[in-house]
Length: 314
Ligand SMILES: C[S@@+](CC[C@H](N)C(=O)[O-])C[C@H]1O[C@@H](n2cnc3c(N)ncnc32)[C@H](O)[C@@H]1O
Image (tube, rainbow, N blue to C red; front, side, top):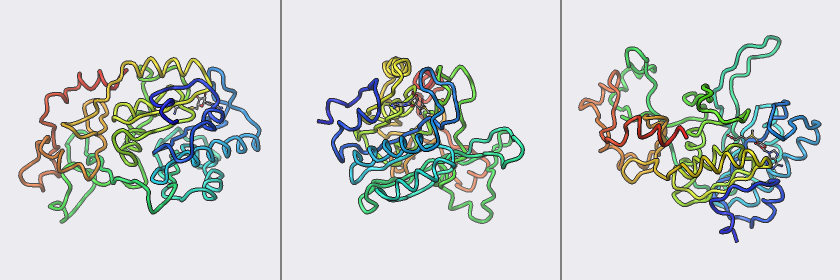
């Protein structure tokens, strides 16, 4: 039954589409709804009444939970204001795991605290069965001198050569800043944000669904990482843009046989369990303490920036 939806981007209303999808059939659901902030979409009017907006959100959130497998995860991205209500809905039908703070500073506006993060609610359908992989990101370094920004003091010998485990605060992934990487869409997310969630909660060939897919960030991340995908958007123009981009995307975000997330030519997320297979592909200082000032590099020629620009900048 689910098969007819796989690897498709559907033009339609997410509630109608999800109602036809069987219970417990998807491994990961992710939604990034309009924030009801009067953003200029192509067709969608981003100005619902307060109660109407929340009533609508509650419906698609419940559908997302219903169609998620017992081993699966539910992610919802929004500004903190709306997430406080989403949590209330989700606590009825799923199990809270994390509030991921995605650091995304904006200009100070005065009179209020400067908004400096978006939130991603991370819920498990069944906490005992939930599929979860610890993930790592590269050490943060001074751009000029290459030294680690964090002072590990006497603990340098215990450093992981690739980088630390990711916490619930993500400060290393930036919003899309350049127009050349942007589609005609007001709220496009970076692909490697979604790739991190996909690597954390799914395996190869698992099914990832985004009911409000916009110009396709989630389905592109899923395809690049060898997952099956389903995307839905009410706007035909966004569906067309997504389909065009997908046609140029390969399931090739790998080092050797291991799926990883790249941003341009830099590996930005790996799974901790995969390090044993990935380590031989890196040039690592003989004395691990030298990680303090020495970056590790990939040894594989396919990591050239040109190769990955081709894969990422679609
Ligand atoms: C914030 S955007 C998603 C952006 C997306 N994460 C990306 O990176 O491109 C929300 C999307 O929801 C779509 N949308 C709004 N109402 C919808 C509905 N009832 N069913 C499906 N899509 C809908 C809008 O057209 C818009 O593209």
